[in-house]
Image 1 (tube, rainbow, N blue to C red):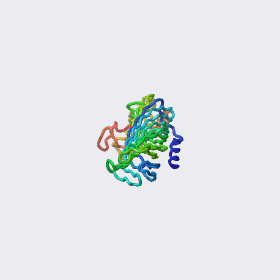
Image 2 (cartoon, rainbow, N blue to C red; image 1 turned 180 degrees about the horizontal axis):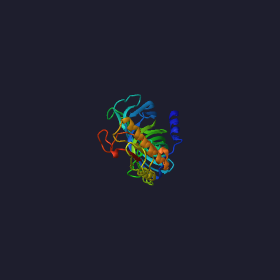
Image 3 (cartoon, rainbow, N blue to C red; image 1 turned 90 degrees about the horizontal axis):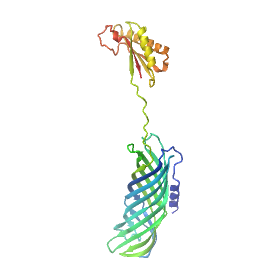
Image 4 (cartoon, rainbow, N blue to C red; image 1 turned 45 degrees about the vertical axis):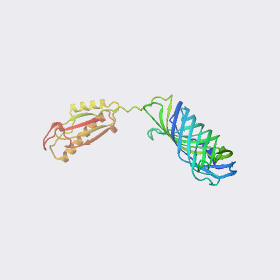
Length: 357
């Protein structure tokens, strides 16, 4: 029993220390359904017929179902407080009563229901998990535990059952995840694990060979639950989507050169001036790409394309464009505007492309 009390005390203080929460503000409601597993129950006490002392007796249960409804309040800083109602049921899978005298034909159901007051904390991880918000919490309350013919049934007349309903203080620890549903502001999907224990229950009757007798049998109740559900916050503002940065379409300016020259014409300087004035909002990079026609040697033309790009970059600098915004490259004879045969002096290919991004 000391171990049980330790677990109950730990559940009461299970809350996170530090984390910036994604806030739920104001009134909210929640609901969840799922599966629960009831730990093996140990019996202790006395049973009037047959007159035995119950030690080392117990029952095991199959996976059952669980339902939870909650009404809560979010404080806008990650903290939430709620009142919860729950219902759980499990069927008996095996039992040992009177030192195994009645080992066959497991029978009956164990049901628990009650109310809890929970304190929870939402842990804001920003966009790290794609909007998923973990949360943890703890609760205390009062749980009724009901045994309906839990025991052994060898036949209709050869049987031994526990019956009764009793209430006890309980505590639980909660860990979960929530995911907002953007189409409905305030609505979120939830997934939870809950561990609940109660201080102990007493069953007040047993049925032996079809006849009910008084009993004084203490039973344990430790339960693990996994739930999926929905939570709706009434005061939630519409989900805010960060405004995308304005997309600036790339703009291209062309500056042409005389054959075998890297000098800027008056018209070229005028175009470069327009580029400097057009930088505006959103332009963070200016590509200056130099080209040549296909007359002359490839190596020479590569160098000429670089000199043309550098000449344009120098004029941009002179007109106040920061050096860190300018990227210069020479491509030689590559990427012609007008495809030609080798050694053709095509004026449209003797150019620098200025691209604003």
